[in-house]
Length: 204
Image (cartoon, rainbow, N blue to C red):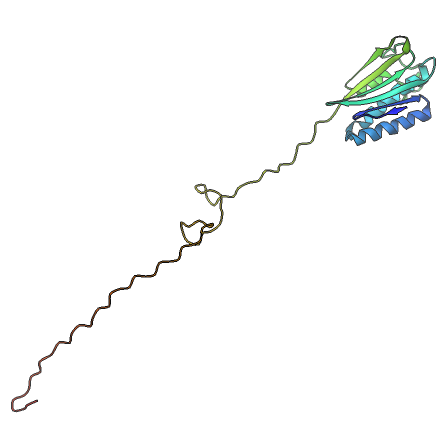
């Protein structure tokens, strides 16, 4: 049975090697869909170790439920099985005692190394839940979309353009220039008669 509310996913399975690989891909796909690509490696490694422990040690069967839940800035991954025995951290897996290069089956030691916190919650005779948490990365800073005003000088306001004439706003129609005043027409100065000396004995 699979349920998928918002930011929550749960899947029930038999903890068999073939199914563990499917769950790894499912967890990766959901974290990618939730834009948590940076948590995929640690989440997949942790859930692999928990499912491997169920496969190797859980009794009376290998049925379990994997849950991933994102709440605020924390991702919680948990595996519930039907074995009420509580695992002990720090105890090496006897199946890996002679394999120094083993990358799975080391259980809670690896889970503790890749997670922010982890724990075990007993469920009485119904089994137990082993969980671990990862902190989500901070969101990226939003791009700066502020706009800026351009000023012609420190003493002026925003530059709006040129007015037709100084002192006239651009939005107001320019007043027509007044007609020049007519200057009075001066009469020509009267001619001044000039006396001319006439030689003696001549007339005219």
